[in-house]
Image 1: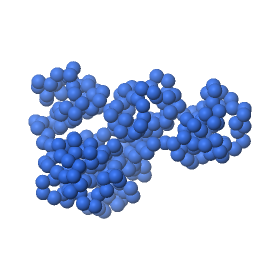
Image 2: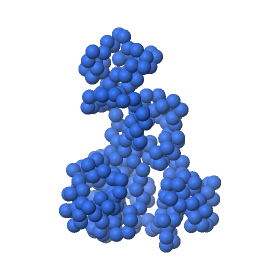
Image 3: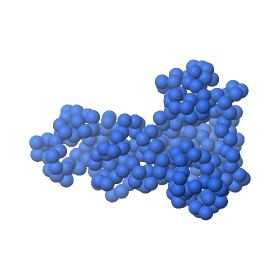
Image 4: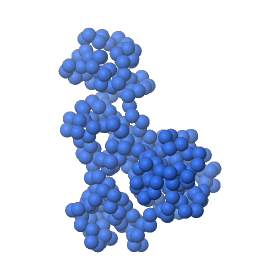
Length: 294
């Protein structure tokens, strides 16, 4: 059975904190413990009644999951034969860079069948008129957000069709009715919401500033403990969109094509080309800014 944006497992009742796994030729509790960064004792505890000396090919057992990488806002996925980061990026409407950021240390050239990785949620690039984007933080609920921003739960739900208010994920972007509150950043800086993989060093390179300048603009912020969804201040001015009316700016990511972008944003290749005269669709560069019709 295939579960959208998540696990791909046969039906199996496994206790909380574990995931199902189908035994393959050569598997032992010892080899599985090494593969999944757990212990033989932990696997045995999760599978009372299973004889580790009589494992059967096709048998389903439960694997403890302390090995899983953090996956705020996304879902876990088990690698299948033939999977590549590029094919997964296309399937789940994210970029290869996004998957790499969500899985630090992963070797894209050595994916293993049965390996569990984090698939980040697709980015939310636009919010409808009269709303502003907000990145969910620990403890947030539609009720608490409605009180904080002076709106109602019903209005937030209407602005976020398809979002389950009972399953908000830290790092998930939703739309809040109203006008975005002041950033609280000092003059000469602009607000930035931290994403997976961000560091002061990478942000300094991206925005043409220095780590020292970012630290000075964010007293009290520990650069070694950045939180996804945290808002910090970046020295300089926010990059202008430079896009004509009826379009929005977009930064090219690994694997992007005009065709994939047209499908993602509900437009056409011709419309994207018309909004980007002089841009060669066959020579897109990662980090290049283009305009997407909306």
